[in-house]
Length: 202
Image (cartoon, rainbow, N blue to C red):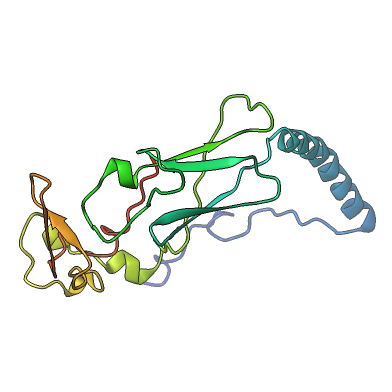
């Protein structure tokens, strides 16, 4: 193949000779451009500000699972808040404890009541903010057993580190009839940080 046959066609596009336009940044041109852009975005900013002012102030509730109880810290603008367990005991519900996979609605179920100082029109949204959840951390993403999730017995549980087994004498496991078993070390199924850090706020 000779050099002539490999030469691009003699067209403006392939010879990189297309017509181009480059603005000359004179003071009048720059000021005029900023003025036009400002006229476009000023109405947009006014609309966004008006819509933002129509949003009701947020209600911030802080939960801490400490010593088998739930503590609520309110900001100075929060409405009156009360909390009780499903069983009726004020302030005695527990978000979690050492019983592991067992669940008792009367003990673990929490009813939170709060009074709004102003009416809120629909739609009303509820948002959660969770601390110490790092789903984008490499250690969190890699802590799972693909073999176990396929329904097979994994030959090693090192992929699940650090959630391979339950801690000694801290977790009680129930059988299919909800009979609480004895404390001890058990292989977690499923294992890994992902499977053991799910959040359910329903």
